[in-house]
Length: 114
Image 1 (tube, rainbow, N blue to C red):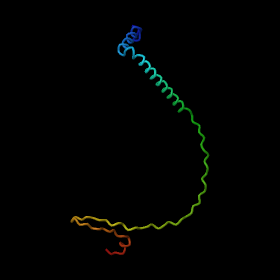
Image 2 (image 1 turned 120 degrees about the horizontal axis):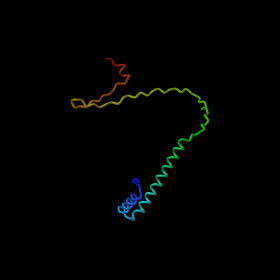
Image 3 (image 1 turned 30 degrees about the vertical axis):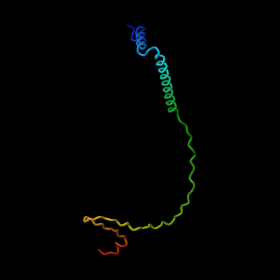
Image 4 (image 1 turned 180 degrees about the vertical axis):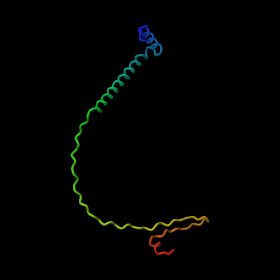
């Protein structure tokens, strides 16, 4: 026993390939296997180049930082907030009638007595 890849074993494997795939399909099989190996080899080479590029130190110069231009602050008057009356709401009661509820404004609540 010389091992699994001895001469007689390789001949038997070749005969099995010819029997299974036929003599006409073997060149096509070999060509596609070669193309696949070529693609695999180029991808591995690309991975190695990516690793080398990532490991290389990156020397970058920082742009010069300039002080911002002075800004003149001018105090402007703050406008008074605009108060609008709340919108009335329509509510349906338990008896089926609709009631209009108008919310009171702050002026109305301060003048009324409870």
